[in-house]
Length: 561
Image 1 (cartoon, rainbow, N blue to C red):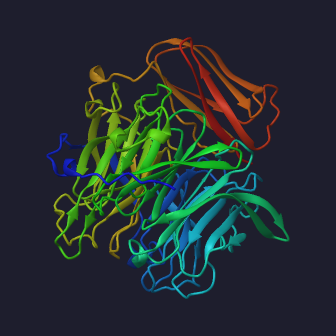
Image 2: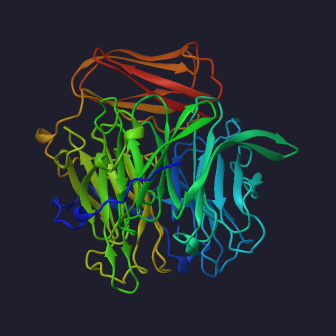
Image 3: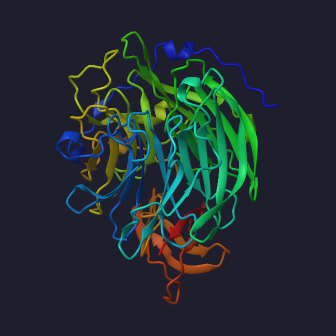
């Protein structure tokens, strides 16, 4: 039987917190936002709670995003494909609307992107709920990329109800390769009962499965793991990573009510085990939404976890629960993870919803990008070196704010911008870092997608005060997945000998990209998916290794044709 730790008092949330001096970073500017609903924008008019990206489905170097809308009112929810263009804008490319769902119900859909059949073409995976007593399409909806039409197919390629009854609601879907086999796993969390049963007997279910085979155009899925013993919580967020650096990925499921984390870990091919669960907060409305990321902040080979929680702004005007930022580290065995590992950084009265990491200003330091939920701001926490678990190691700035005069007050949230998800990269392929974020506002006069771009300068940070976390900083290759080529970037604190090599899944060296001396600064090499002799390689997983006299860094990339 699984034993839950007692909920902890959250007096520290109410204490006066160490507030950083927050300034507007003028090196970022708004380049594009889509028209509001009433002006031909996001149609149907459902707030985009979920967005994933960036990808590069057609290999043209421009970032692609998949958006899911919900809470649709008189409209039905849907899934949208947007792509950046070379004029600092983003265009709608494809849309699918779930018309068979109840359009007056609190409908919800979550999305992920993967290549679950291993054919080199991406799929959109949408998890769609239904209202009680309503039949029709529900469950897993899969749309495959068609390389001939350069678009996703107009109808679902595969569907699966996941064996669920007609009364359930979707929470979250996530795609990752967990257990070392060639097939990607699909991770879902669903609620076996409507929202109003949570806390009174409703339950949630975690499922991990992969595509087994396709027979007569019907997909057969193999369930690897199920955990349906949880009651009175909703698994609202799923993240994966290797926090304890033991070579086995963990699956983190975060409840919507309270800040409750449930941890499972891969233990071998198709096998998983429950590790621990605990409450970080006893406050029901201290919710951790799509805000949990595992990354090596200081690039020392050990991962940290960053968590952002949302608060609640009661429409009755009598409740404000702030959201919070935490950084977690120093975990040798994930089964011992507890609230004691959570380092509280800052409380935000408007709450936080989305979270991502990147380096949009291209200065070699990792940035934490926080989506301010009710306060309409996008926050940037830049790591400046030192201990990533210490507040003093970061500089906080505001990248974007919708309306500095619109003070946040209880009961005033429906007209808010409500930033939900944020992603970074050179989205429009112009050499400058970008941030793309979505707004889950209920207001019809609010845009719902935004593109903010860095101007290429270092503003607000004195170069003589910056201390880099290590001699070498490896940036994720971009794009990834890629076709036909990808950029591998790294930052050197000082001049040194560098070797850059590419290996296949078997550990065979397929390409040497560089071997020699590089000066201090930011560098980039390009790999076009070919062997040493120039022969094109097939689609699949490859690894690039960057070695110096001090250390070897290895990261995974996916060639998709």
